[in-house]
Image (cartoon, rainbow, N blue to C red; front, top):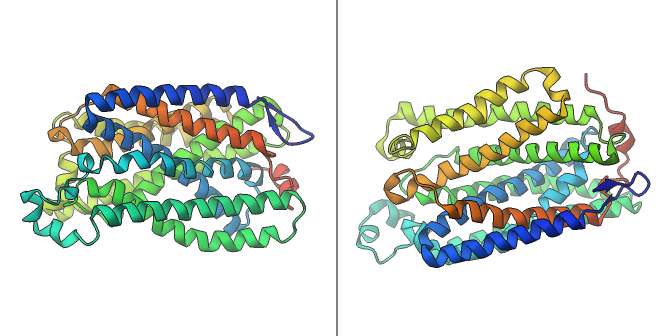
Length: 394
């Protein structure tokens, strides 16, 4: 890869994108083989990878939305990169389709003819919402809304590059309405694909928890991409000041993710209601205690302590290391949310967790770099671009 300072294009991305595509296809083929061997394990692993990458794409979309709403200038140089990250959402919508064929393996409430479901008062009360037809319709509508937002904002962004002075106002208005839609749809997505795996459990803060982890992971990926751009010729545009700011956001949302997760846990703990506490019991017993402690240590305590120091935020290799750990722990977080529901709540990991991660990840990275190499990687038409380039951290 190489950044062209005249055209603001990221050149020579096709080779990396092709390698990612090959890796993705190989991973998906191996996963399909695994599906014939054990379809239940396949769908569990596939769902983990699917929600992991989808929430990262959502984090990119939120970065764009909040950037337009606040009118901040510091992030202009990274706005197009975040737009490209958000552009993975339509692809994730297509990759969602195989999960519709595994609903019986994933969701207990979908067993409508099972006597346990038929005589379960809670599931019968939730049946108007938790039913296969409405679930699929909701999921499709949600991804259509996200795709509409992504396509509209990117189209206006590229029009701004061509000199359309009205694009800025249109993007801000679309982002204002889009943020409301984003909040509603992300909550529904979290409730449907993650919380309803255990339909007797509920948490009104769960949607915020899922969003927090996704945005933190997106900030981590944006930090890695920012440093990659600096190392490939864009260091006069994407400066140490911008990566420092991204480091501060990493620090803030590491604390925010932990705060939301802790708030959810302690509210349920002191409430001591059996149908609520069972969620955390399943993530503490039968081998899951180590995973829970691992998550607390490496998703919060260590990055929080390291990022608290100003000097760390100005050392690229340390930011890359912390960002890489944040992405890995985001996957562990989704593994922790999903897999204790199955296999009698015992800790188990399958080789298909690796192949589905490789498969969906390869497709995700392929499309991301296709978009990054197609148009200028910097929003050259933004009137605040120069102010963003001259930005200095205080």
